[in-house]
Amino acid sequence: MESRIVHSSLLSNFLNVDFSTRQLSAQFKTLVDSILLKNGLSTKNDWLIVFRVVYNNGRQLLISKNRFGTFYSDRIKEIQIVIPIPSIQGVPWGVKDNQYIYGPDHYQTLLKNFWVEEVHVLQFNIRADYIYDCLRRAIERAFFEGFTVGGVKIVAKSI
Image (tube, rainbow, N blue to C red; front, top):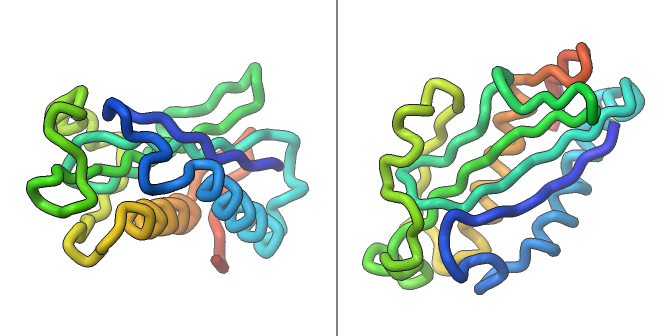
């Protein structure tokens, strides 16, 4: 089983501004691979686990449940992580309101498909630390709750 961390943004001119997606991907691929190895899951099958990080206007950190994100023909399990990025009016490292593509309620009708984590943006002084914390918590939650990859239930007993 392999892992990959990919990033996309529903904010204009956002990716790689005051943080590095390449660095985050490398750090968290190492974390995911070590969780799989530590829990005896790294050799279970030949599927690819993709954590798709989406930066968006929103209120909460969202982690997709097991209900969707399985691509059998390609042997890919995708877990979506939605990281809400605050406005610059709330924190100095936030984004300008005109960078938002969707409104803050964009995911409200889809919440039943996600595990929800609260975010505390005021605890962070820089964007990179906030994103790192959100990504770490989301990956840990996904492994704690569990998901199925190619018929194998993945639940990490130890992270």
